[in-house]
Image (tube, rainbow, N blue to C red; front, side, top):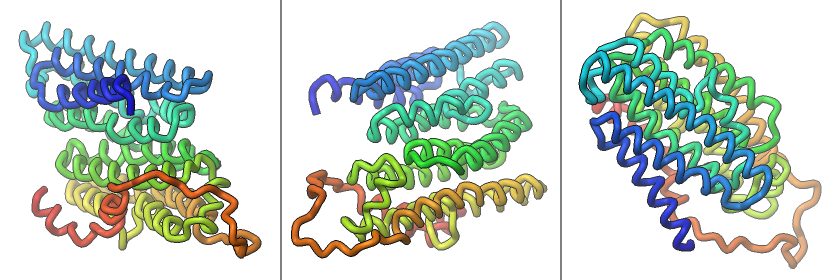
Length: 346
């Protein structure tokens, strides 16, 4: 890694950390700006017109969200006379901040940029975009839970899960599938935020682990389409089986980790006398499960027409070292027994 990239990644990290540790609105805004300006060159790492387009789209949407955030901060300052994050007295600034964070997270109806930007950037940049970039906006929503408009957040969450499910159905590009998966997962976090924000943070951590694991496998084989992923079974059968498990975990199937946050969210919503919403969410989650299973089918359950009996491999061996991948895969698939402990912590 060269020095320039190290400086950019450090700025990205520090921007998010500044948002996480600040209680002053201006410092939070500066953190978001640092984060955004560091992300643009990361998206354009492999320079091409497509990457440039993706970076421009990302910059425009994030700049708009930052402008809305600054508007809300100014309105709040005028009405209350102070900069503290936890005391948003007025409902209008609170609503504008929620919209701003939804834009930064890529929740519906502000989701259009997410698949385009993820598809236009390299795999490693897409991984950062769909994991690390979700942390800062989520922390703001977490700190603002007492004043968030529940109806507005619920409406956005319902839209997100529908779009995240339908949008990914016809895709063959893996980065777009992961982007729509991200939109759907944001919904589960948003819906529970005003009822039990701790579960939303747990969901975020589980989602980040599963997405990192999936991207690690894609990076290991440099796979970007369903077709290139279907070649894995002949080359790396063990990784293919692990990819199947992670995809099913992302879909939220019971024996795997991905079921944990869904289970806890549905339980919490039913405690709050919401029956229809969790029912609809569980049903629309099947759309996501469908395209994960389709990916798993083309990856792990279909064999190449002939077995590979040649002494010479037709593909080069990969030399990438993925030290953190095994623990990530274990946490992404086998952490369901920890659910009782997590529910006690919440």
